[in-house]
Image 1 (cartoon, rainbow, N blue to C red):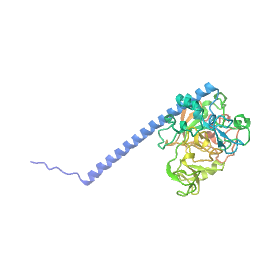
Image 2: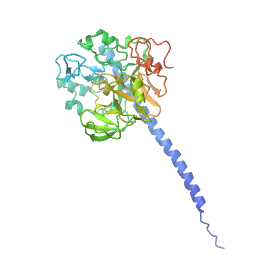
Image 3: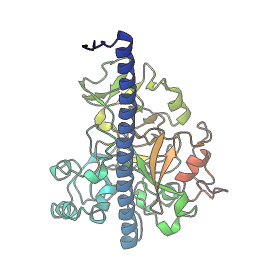
Image 4: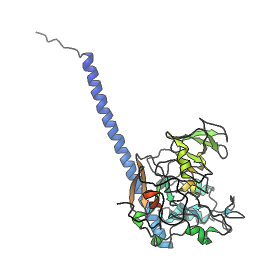
Length: 370
């Protein structure tokens, strides 16, 4: 007798499809999680190598490199006025980032030698623009750019630039007010860190904003405008940077809602945002502060003041390189005190545990991290 082959019912087919889809979803989620874990480990490794580099610099030179200073130069009648570019080596403030000083200590000896041989050219010369430094890129950030790692200027939102006529390297009052490990013409020694190497943050992460293409200056795009010369507009999301002449971190917070800056905000074009220029030491390119918590909004003047918040594409926080070379993951929910607190140059940080991590000599009463 011939057996009759029964066909699957529609319900059975739908049930199988649902089970397969669920398993595929679980598998894809696991794959994505594993990939991000791998990218995060790579990011941490690169930060750790940079930590070895600044320790070698401190050992060889007796101090950490400045966030901005040295061979690439500027000139101004007063140190507090917007400078005009000019070639090295006439007396100047210097515009090279800490990366330029670190090159021979992070395995980039040939690039450093080429820069020296070229007479230490200004920051926009081909020798810098053509350089590709994978060691400065975190694989979690797919946007094109030159770097993802930023130097800590501590728990301040102003005072990045002196207001007097004394060169900043010689201005004791200005240098005393620098709270972080890196600053304009700074020469901080690791041995001078009062709050402890393991409790003081040295570097963290920045994210390159997503480009929307070239737009004329001042033309509104989705309710926001863009400052500076015609340039690449960026997506209005948490990785955009708002232009701000205000010192207040609380004003920065108030201008940001629902993962985007409010309508009427003015954003920086991509060429004035973090990750654009590894060699140029202006704070908006290579620095971060410990005022607003990680992955919060970032609002700043190009180089004078602002809330330079570190950001990453890692879920829930940012990678942080401590002054002792250890790499930690700092959550977005870290206690960060009062964003309306006044700027300060001495004493414990008003920005909680997060602010205290940025201060090298705040004399915070309790250990900040376990």
